[in-house]
Length: 288
Image (tube, rainbow, N blue to C red; front, top):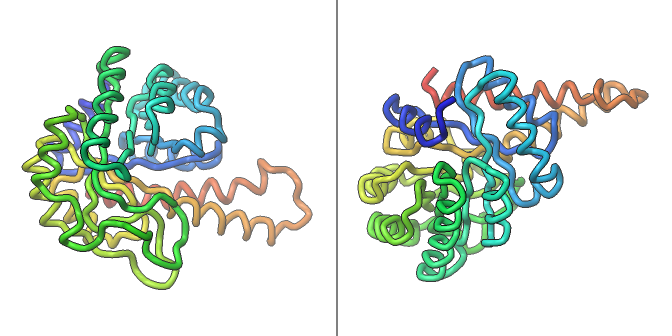
């Protein structure tokens, strides 16, 4: 099976983006994987610090390894939003494919220094492990929001610039780069999410010269996704949309079958809901 670096390069050639979908349980995993497998598309499974603490960092790695062994499928594991070197070291040692090292709340200089440390360690363990760096704060919570995240870079003067991106990538040597370009984590309850600064994405891709990652994909309009992919986005993160689909389907399943106590029966609907939500995004990202 090809490594993630080669899969990303092929996606760039085809002008498509790879879907990065977070999970926190087995039902969510099967929903995402079955959607990808039915469409024959590569997939990245993301687990944040909280999600991998719940599942078990070693256990989710074993799950992904078992799927690779059984299906010989291009499925990859991402340590999403890892906030310290110690937590990064843990998943590097376990052999995750991608470490999303997020020190975007620090100063530029501190962010660069810590990211370089993370990358150096990863290279010493396994050069095939990809390190993603982030610049620009977009909030932290994948949930329904009453207001925009405090301090998020959403103004054209505050979002990541091409010059900043170029300097960050050159100084850190990261494999992937995630900018703040109007995206936020989570979805607004009472209005649409902000629009993306697509031209800025294009400028950053040209200046940084590494594949770009778009976080906070939930709630972004379809046309912005299409434009962002054309401009240089290679990986798109989706989490909140899956959580909403899962929760709503679970509520309905329990309401329709209030006497049911077998989890494998009432959890079928949430699994299908996650699969359907994932399929919709994968088709868009792949231009199907």
